[in-house]
Each structure stands twice: as C-alpha cells, then as structure tokens.
Amino acid sequence: MKNRIVLAGILTFVFFCPANVMRAQIRGKVLTPVAPVLPMDINFRYVPQYFEQSFDDDPRYARIEALVDDGRCDVILFDKTMNLEAFYSTLNRKVEALAATGADAYTTPIDFVASSTEDSHRLFQIHLHDQFGQEITWRLSSVRW
Picture 1: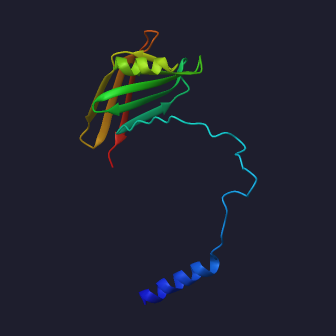
Picture 2 (picture 1 turned 45 degrees about the vertical axis):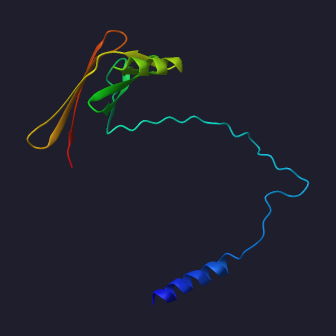
Picture 3 (picture 1 turned 180 degrees about the vertical axis):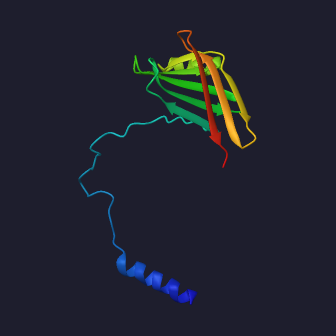
C-alpha cells in the first residue's frame, strides 16, 4: 500500500514537472538587477518576557515597552510630543552603543518587581525616571496559562 502511494507521488511529480535545461544567462547579454542589492546588518534580541501597552490619556507618552531578561529590565517609551522613542537601560555600555547609532538612549535605574497572587495572576511593577525627571510607575498583571 505504501509503495503504491510513493509510486503515485513520483509519477505525478514526473508528469507535472518535466525536466528542462535552463541557462543562467543568455549568451552575449549580461543581466543586471534593476535595483542594487544593499548589504544589511540585522540585529535582534531574544527576551523571555516582553510587555507593551499603548494609551491615549497621558499627555506625553503614547506607548511603553519593557524587555525583561534575567531579572534586568530595559524600557522603551514613545514620546508623542516629539514623535520619538526613548530607550532606558541600566547598562551604560548598551546606552552608549545605541547613542552612537543616533538613538535616543539614557542610563537610569530601573526597578522591576515580579510577584504572583494565589489565583495564578502574575503581577509586575516597573519604576523609573525619564530624561525629564518624571517618575514613571507601570503596574500590569497577566494570567498564567
């Protein structure tokens, strides 16, 4: 039974995909791409916990993001008055590297506290001061599945 299924699959492939000889380029005519292919440097970061919240009622900020990794927390605030993202971290070298690329980055103490309730709700609190000295406290909860 399995041999018949395999044989039917091979015959179908041979019938619908006939072998042809193809050339990479036509002789005497060099094909160049329409647009140049630019090299890219793609950086990514894996974090076990990522939190994001958008809000309309704050006069300055429209969104807050937190990247939590090994008890350390980095925060990104989107300032809607300047249409700019500001990155906050406790690591000075990370802030210096981001600032060197033109990012708006600041070193600041960030307090991150994680706890849970008896009914499996996870509670998180993030506390920091932004570049204007404004105190920011973000409390959120999630349900453990």
